[in-house]
Image (cartoon, rainbow, N blue to C red; front, side, top):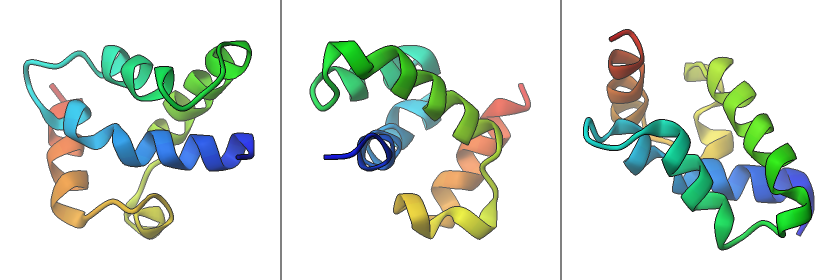
Length: 80
């Protein structure tokens, strides 16, 4: 799987952890990448995920398989 594919898969696996108030977002990203990304690529993929999450908007939700309610929850939590 390409790095972009791993990035997309990891972002798809991250929303539950990113929207749960008792979960640290960075820990959720680390956990999502541990199983699917080789250690040699993990830091780069995690940095890409953080950058993509910073730029996340309604127009790209489908790219990552995210639903509008998940995005709304994540966005609201990010403001706190």
